Length: 264
Image 1: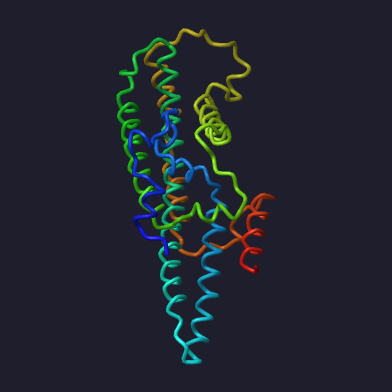
Image 2: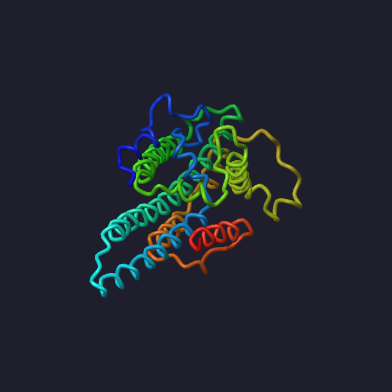
């Protein structure tokens, strides 16, 4: 059985040499980068699969006990499975929190850049600057929690049998997903300017007052915390039902690979 020391070797603690030289919107640690890029549906399927294995082992242990034959190996494996399941469920929640905070950070960034691109000093929006720093700090804290949980979860072992290609620092898939999210957020910021009542009126002069610009940006930057709370409540649930997931073709292939490996 893999010891905690061996696990730690495969997941190096965040150091200068182990960090990605990428944009600030990505995790700095390589293992954390790989995890947050995993599909949420895959994490849910992984939890379900481990619980199924735990149930099957428990059945065997039960019948062995009826026969008076101890099964210490399976009992030890079950103990390890319980720890992994709990760790992956915690990771699932942390991933949801991370994505929520990341979206908020990008929205704040876009609003501040809009002000700066008008030739104004970002100091005119001290609240947004302060909140951006707070969100950045929260992201770092979540990354640390994710790294610690990865030692217990060993979730990357499950991806090996699924045929899933993990993202690399040079991969563009993860970046494209993040840019898509940023584009959606940027659309939200400019929603007021594209409202129907403004379409029939002559275009406004590009020269706007500093006060009006800052006020407009602040109105667009208000972040609704109810969505984050809704996601958090859902992710805290200890039971994961596959019916709750929106299956894609790739997800079905992953589950099929898992099922065939167990039957083999």
